[in-house]
Image (cartoon, helix red, strand yellow):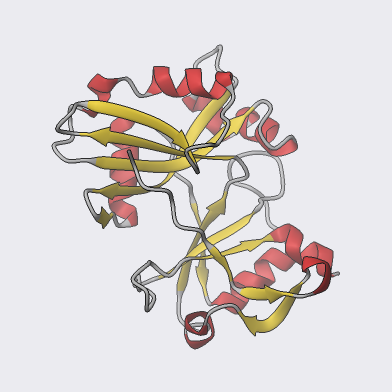
Length: 220
């Protein structure tokens, strides 16, 4: 079974009523690297999904963010059709695919917008739910973005698009304004950000940040 995807940290702390406090960083690494280049992919508002391939057992696992996560039957049926065991024959190692389930019944207006936009091309005519990839782990190694893109191409599944390059404060300004989703006719949920040269935190996990457009709308 694939490991649970690490929780992604928001860059600023929250105060009363969960409003973010600009300038009060949640991690010292964010403050230290705020003027460095970060790469942002569009944050997808969906259901966290992890798909595992156990090479020795030739076994596929489908899970939500946790073992107790409840997944809709529509989404599960899509995943079963999309990821039969023989699709993983190209891999000779254990692999974990991490992504978001999207579509009808998932996050309201976002799910509807995604299925009517670019992602519709990855759905069969009767599909109402789909899967978009954002990260891949082979054995104990997280892949670089170009390799994630390659995996997506080989499996014919969409990958979250890169939509930003710049400093953390430039990313904040973009989310304050709001920006058009590349995946549907809707304002994007936000950004997931990694340093242009990936860095690990003191505890060993990768340094990843997130920003949500709605957090700044609430502050207005």
